Image (cartoon, rainbow, N blue to C red):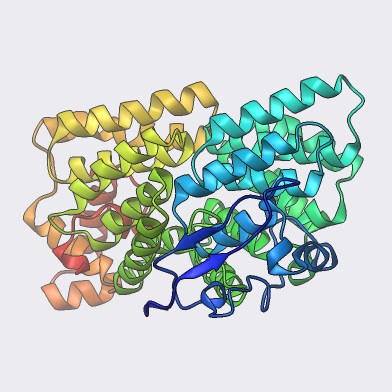
Length: 450
């Protein structure tokens, strides 16, 4: 997928939400770069639409509606992002009278993926207000789900849950069911309600492969596994999600950032080569798309995967971009990780600033997992400030643990007793504010992890 191909030119009439021809000079070698300029020859997928409706909407490439055409470009992540934003705005303005829920859904999602969440939310509010309680249910569920997703990404998962739970009890359209359930599970994981998220999966999402948008469902299950501490299953689900999206020719990490999420899990597992490869791939794709949120998420993963002298810089830039994108939930995680990197390096002041910022955001949003993690890190900083950072022996033992050696193997290599190794590791966990070995790779500033 690295070779450049010929310019893609699409001709569409400027009517009924359609827009003027757009040319892209750097199309990747995907189905959207075919010489015959037909977008739909190999497409079987549109986000939140069943296959039958998607195929019906595709029609001929010369007559695609603007919402469909924009989403196909978003999937590839190759057309200038600002151009897609302008085209989506034209579609939404054209749909203001008697909106087609399907076209509206795709145009709003395009804005969300372009980090124009405030703009998308304003469209939702305006259209909901205009209906005055007489909105058709398909339109109501479309607007409600998009606004709930924006709430979750913006650090308001409780509001997202409040909106989505009654909608799902009433019953959403079959084509939207997969994304609605996936988004609700992710919001529940964000607030730490893992039992409700697990029950939702067991009750409604047992046949994952049969669900519409099952790549999103796999990503949600991966998030749940990670929240429950099952990192191996989390990684497997993120990689399975990526396999599905790749088969559907969805290259844009703004849709599901599966590589960066998998990279963070792989780093926690100590699988640093895999983590670095995934993070680097996502960063390249995110830079092609260009949204600050996508690039920020990728840089967060790069910093945690590589664990070298550039890690702090990557995390600091990630924090800046995620704040610019108003992606507050992702921002909290990046701030916590940045704080832990500073703590390991002995920079207590910067560590405290980053973790306190994450804690304040989490407290305002009611996100208990981040609050607990931030509190744990803050609780270790005073002892580090008093000069009780890792000793040389503790760092050496921790580095071997990151590489996957058992306590017995570490003891044999360093000519220590197993009990001594256990004692040193307990001190390491306490000083770094972590629960155990599983989290060690996620916080060690390890040449040991290289």
